[in-house]
Length: 161
Image (cartoon, rainbow, N blue to C red):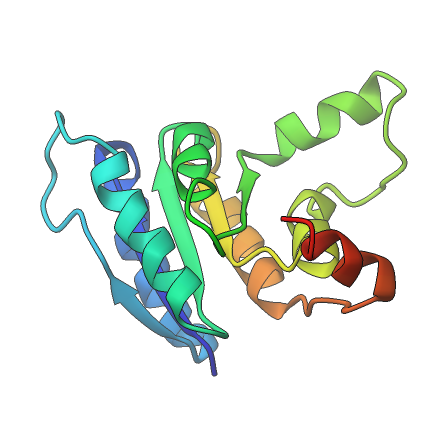
């Protein structure tokens, strides 16, 4: 089984603990990279950069980055070569484009599934202020269970990163 590293700032601190337990239930080895105590003034780059470096340096490992919106955490992780972070900040956000006539997916969790299958994403960034615990668990399970397709066009695109 793959190793899964988790990091969270103050906004994702509580969810990180829940997801560490959940990973164990799923049979994954999870490792907490911090924050190790709640600190309202912490800075997510101090936590996400080490997470991204760890994932990028260990083949077949994954990361879960958790913050308020997940946006900054994803941006920070994606600055590290070899880290490919995808964002999930809730099914309500994923559904909005469909309600407005855009998109073609019936499954709101495709926003998690497709970055794994098409981009070999190795970090999932979660917006703790926008999702429930159950939604976070579902996103994590889908992310970890979805294999990279290794299709020719996807490999070609990855080579351009």
